[in-house]
Structure formats: structure tokens, C-alpha cells
Image: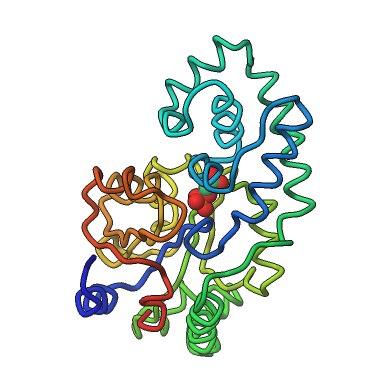
Length: 277
Ligand SMILES: O=C(O)COP(=O)(O)O
């Protein structure tokens, strides 16, 4: 693990913090697993333990369902390999249409129940509110032409920029509907400078496209931005975009999948360093 002093020094150089959602800001497993299992049961497939569902998360909700179905036929660990998943589904006659049908049942159930057993990790609400309040204070600057024009756009505020006020963004592969419902429940829907979800980002992680878009919207240079995430798509998206990343080892990602990516900066969880952001 990177020492706390090193993490603090790294954070001190950054202005834009791009967070992942599942397993990083929120523990969503308690609602994701029952929704996956509800869909499995409706289609006569076997259900999975929470720990196995953890392995299926990370590459968007359609791939979550693909992996959960494929794990009826191949070992859970092999479902990280999407080619193997595709081969298995084809062999077992699960067409794209059939997967879409299962996904629809899953999505409806998940949307209905996605805030029941979902909690932000310790320190997350305070961290996001603290940063957005600071940004809002600067936004009240009457001399700023950007603020006059746009009302509330902290990242474009001249004072915000010159004072190097930090801002936060979220980049998740989760669909926007449940993501927004979760943010709303905890009063965080306006806390980010911007956020992109699985169906609103130009391309899902591990593509760098979402990070590029966030950098474009905030006007912050890549070397001033950092990704914070718990799974392989986060680490790879940051690498692909050429920005730093703090990889969390106590979220949903499995150590054996994260270690081969040789992450530069590592921590246990966001609670370990949230107060320094
Ligand atoms: O929905 C997923 O597959 C993962 O979502 P995340 O990008 O917030 O981890």
C-alpha cells in the first residue's frame, strides 16, 4: 500500500477528483445481488452468493447479467474474461435478445429496490459536501463573468479557477437511472462538477473517453486530475487516459485481478484518506 504521507502529497497536487461509484463511493452490493438473483430465478437459472456477484460487477449492467448467466455453466472466476463469457452464452443458446430480456427484468427490479441496502462509505457524504460547498462559495463571486452568464457552474468560475478550488466528478459504468436515485437519496445529486454514467458516457471504462469528456467539461489539465476506483476498469481507464489513479483494494475489485495491472498508488478504502481531499 502507498503510505498515507505519499497519498496526502499526491492529493495536494490535484484539482479534480474523479470517483467511481460501485465499491468506491457506495456499497451497492446489498441491492445489486438480490436484483441479479431475482432475474436469475425468473429465468430458471441458479442464484449467486454476494461474493460471486461482486466479481460480475464493473463493466456495466448488461455485462453483469451476461456474467451471472454464464456463471451457471463456467467457474465464476472465468467470467471476468468477456470472450469466454460470449463463447459460453453462444454455446448455451443465450442470444443477445434473451440476455436483453433477462437484463430488463433485472433493471426494473434493481431500479425499484436500489436504495434499500445501499450506503455511502464512511466519510463520502462529508467529503462531497465539503468540496461542493467550497466551490459554491466561490461561485457567488459577482465579478466573475462566467458566473453572471451561467449562474452555477463552479468549474468555470474565474475565482474558482484562480483559487485552485478542488472539484469532484463521478465516472461510473452503472446506468444513470439508479445512479441518480442513489445520489438523490443521500442529497448528493448536485455535489459533482459533472458525472457520467454507463449510458451517458461516450464510452464505458476501461475506455478513456469518459475521463477525456470530464476533463473537457471541467477545463482541468490531465496532470491535475486523479481517478479513484476499486476495480480493473477504473485503473485501466485512468491508464488509458494518462491520468493518475488511486486503486482501492477493499472495494468490489478482487486483488488477484488488480495486482497484474501494477497500480501506482494503492489504498484500502476511501475512508482512509477522504479527510485529506
Ligand atoms: O455498474 C457497473 O458495472 C460498475 O459500476 P462502477 O463503474 O461504478 O463500478
